[in-house]
Image 1 (tube, rainbow, N blue to C red):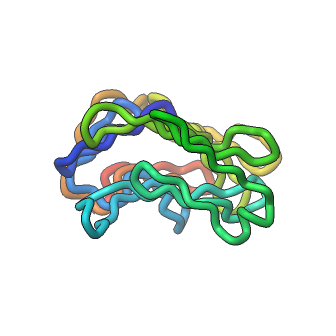
Image 2 (tube, helix red, strand yellow; image 1 turned 90 degrees about the horizontal axis):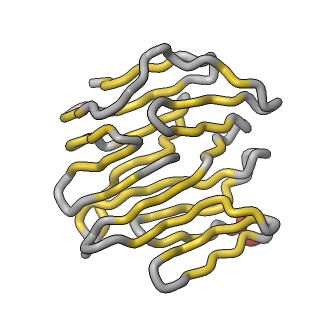
Length: 168
């Protein structure tokens, strides 16, 4: 994921695209990978599940915090908080980073695995890799600088390589 910036208003910048009042920014099959949730005392914030390539649910990112799951603790997930960064590692390999910026904004970077072993990378356009590491062609359009507003799902990837954007 190249960039995810959250602002105090309901607008989220994700891979150069802006999502306004969109509860699920990125979904793979039936699994939301980047969602906006209501957090008591914080208002809206992001929620991102972190899976291992074998499908183990390792950690959950909620806002600017990373929480290991019970399975993640068994798998040896380490979460370190530094001055302006949270880092989640598994077996010494960085799985997720959150970089605090001014105010309520933060930036994250990750290569997100799905529960069934697919790998999702997002820069200007989503890239999808099956569990064997084979790239699947996703869409054909380059999504840069778009605004998605008041839709249920912003970007919906499927294991067959199909892509739907702006799902009402």
